[in-house]
Length: 392
Image (cartoon, rainbow, N blue to C red; front, side):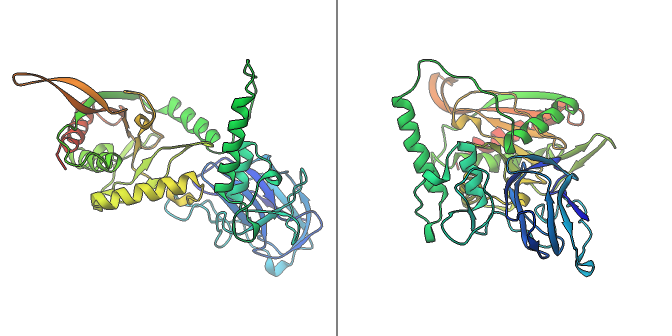
């Protein structure tokens, strides 16, 4: 008997949730045959078989959360020449989705039975959906059997889910009860990752936050706000590099970076997902705007790759897109800085000879006071404001 344990799917993640099995007990599988789709805090990952042999036992069911290193599959009749060792944990700079060989994420069209508990692939008469679509359907509480497919060859798409969910919300509003029923849900996926990272923040970081406003009344072009904010962060990193990097508490080392890789928090129905825009310091404002558009779309469609959500040097929380003026945004160790941008305001400001109404962006800069001084943070924020207040 040979046991395959759940490998580290990237960045030391402690566990993963079983989305769907693609084999059953008694099946003969070969090396690199698809075993299971799992969802980590980062993305849906398809795990291939590391052995040729017979599946003797599946140690978890769809919906179960399995700890990294815990038994996943037992194999019998394993071909000795085909046995391969389990891979080491992925380095943050490598493809965090790699398990054995090259592991694609959510690309292969899988078919799922409409019967509760069914998860094996079949050739005919079954629902067609990729793992990312199945995951979103599960999050929304949608039954794939009830959804009209508009994709190629009868495939259910993200758009089909959104359309079906929108219809359901209309019906729900028309039949809304007078009282709200409470419920208790286990945290999964991005929400589970948020709980873990915030627990780490609470235990480690010495938080301090500075608040100020940037007057953007002189902007020539009244759009591209997110792109302008990202450019301004680069200006802050140039002025005070200490906020662009990491603090390693065990060694008490403060590591600054020349690259500016900005993680941008995106709110989704599944929870907060934080993709990264790389090398912003080398981009034009048009390049930044295009990168933001691409990243938001990929994140909301859950097609963002795991390697696009790791190893960032600074974070932006643009909560003002919805509501709120100031906040105390929290960074995830080992990063040491995060900028929160609030809702645009029209404020009365004093000018020479009287008062005027100007557009202003509220800013909240949180930093790790273990390695960043208040003076450094203030100079960073001043550079951000100076860049934002430029006409273009």
